[in-house]
Amino acid sequence: MKKTALVFSGQGSQYSGMGKMVYDNYKEARQVYEEAADILGFNISKLCFEGSRDDLISTKNTQIAILTTSIAMYKAYEHEIGLEPYCMAGHSLGEYSALVASGKLKFQDALKIVETRGKLMQDAVNEKGGCMSCIIGLDSHIVQNVCNKYCNRDSVVMISNYNSPKQSVISGNEEAVTSVCRELEEMGAKIIELEVRAPFHSILMKDAADKMAVYLGDFKFQDTKMPVISNVKAEPYNDTMEIYKLLPEQIVKPVRWNESMIFMEYMGVDTLIEIGPKSVLKKLTKHNCPYVDAYSYDIDEDVREIRKKAVSCYGVKKDEVDWNIFIEKCIASAISTKNHNWDEKEYDEGVVKPYRMIKEDYYLMKDNNEKATMEEAKKAYHMLSSVLVTKKVSDDERNYIMNELFYGIYSNYVDDIAG
Image 1 (cartoon, rainbow, N blue to C red):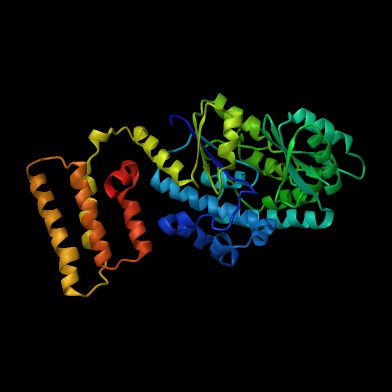
Image 2: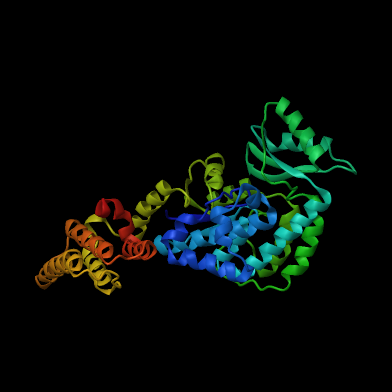
């Protein structure tokens, strides 16, 4: 993980329940959903966690829901892993999440911009219609040649996403898209109709792009050192003025994801972590840059692997871990957490006795200048668990305490300590 890129999910990755895991386990993630609700004026967490399929594929809902979920996941990543990436990028809508995470755009401003972007794009759809389909198995130049056959004064169909050497997405008028898909299928392509009832990244979005260019003038982008790769040019933005120019263009121009990935690999990126719902970008990495390790922060197994890899980046070997600090955190949490159980017998057995035993053993060891072992840390953890259960601490508070406990280098040893 010498050079890690964070990439953010785009539209089409949404699902009911997205973000619930980080919401339940990280205070920082909950704060993102709460801030979004205050700005938008409705309970967006309910939309993300309980929204129906129809609710979530509506562009005016999808874009703000994915943005909020992605930033909530990023805050969880920032708290739990904390490794600064080499660069950032986002697929289409995900570019706004990358701009927020990089510090170039405030989250509250991004919400307003994306909410308006979604409405403008939905308006364009309502007026002109259109759809998108994914083409798998054919080179993009073949796809483009077939598209050209069905483009005329009254009909538009074009490549909207260059996702990988053998995967493209086309957008345009529904009849033209259907005709192209039929011909490409006869040539051996696999066709997937996307759950996006709109011709995104095509000239049919021009009205939305023009209005977006005007609307962006009301917001300020910050100069930061973190490179963010533009979908339009497949290279990092040069400055903030270029952001004002290229974000509106992104609505009508294709997403050059394949080239963006190749650029990252050329710059030495060896690890990619997808932040946001699902793992679409992780899967695309295998086709674009097979030698780059790719993970999704929405997959538990991947998160555990990221933790393990992060340990080496902290420069701490297993036998060098300072378990004294871990035990001190257990002791501090046990005594400082508010009690909600007034049964004296239960309190004595589940709090006083285990706490006193761990504390006395630990400080005796410390007085003798001894280093704690993982086994002693494990005993301290189980003491803390007993204390929290006996004190009848809520699940949310317990999860927060445990996330604080296993922060940083200790995150690699969750299974060893808690098992």
